[in-house]
Length: 436
Image (cartoon, rainbow, N blue to C red; front, side):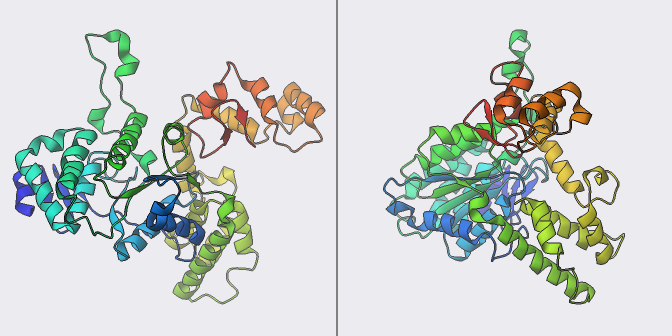
């Protein structure tokens, strides 16, 4: 098969590495600082669905795992992938990452090709079938994802369906971070010169690529020859919510307080602080007793906060662990650009999320009000005074109807502005009502 793929001039296989037009796609790092003891309930629920999903009253082949930025999705998917791989259950996986090279895991270019390669490594007959496609149809590497899925995966699976896959133990394909898939430079199609009136419709967006990936996976799952379940992980942005609300999918798994993230974050911090103590030969009194409860509270259920604090302490060369921990505990939002803030990575992450809004400055204004920005009448003039007169005895965050009446310039503006910001704010239903 290696020779066959080399002959295609666009696809080279070298020791578990895929090379497409000089693009190297190596297996994604799967252990993102998540301890085996953490998120046990989440992993157990997903594992049970993978292994025993056929016994459900209405079996389904696609499950969505979602949660806000920093809730530990990639770490959970990585840990689950490792477990499934060690038990022979993993058919393939792909971890999109916006920080990867542009032509690698950052874009859709290598997505189907990588899955085809992984499947081929585990089934000799399937490997031969895929190799024949590559020899006979080398243009497949220039085709869209739907065509690649048909030619490189579904067609070969149909060909060998009654043979090598009949007794396979492999049960799942895991796809993480679809919301991080970025447009390739050539994909932002310029409008056609012949029709200048359709400028907006001719431009391709990240969301178009996200939807294409989802539709390709649904295309695969709907094919009788495709024997795998599919787990898709992403943030709860609009395109994903609309897609998963409309199809015959398993109930989504949302990473929320149901799974007690505080306990898992505390376990994570305890283990990492123990590693730091051993590495720097610190006394058993470090960190002070209040440290872990304080950091867990500051994390607000977000694993990324805890991981960022640990990275700040272990990777900084400017100070010792005692000083760095004190900086982390005392950090204020105003410190973000000081050069010594432990939450600089978080600032960059949430800045990127805010950029997905059609009007980021206006969205920030909405979020400021939602978060209780009107609670101080001295700082907000007459509007703050009115708010205090009406809701002075209630919590500082205003109710949804007040926010809508105060801020909406047109009906449905909340969904328009904040629909892609579900990592930062929850919306009940599709429009109108903001949850506090």
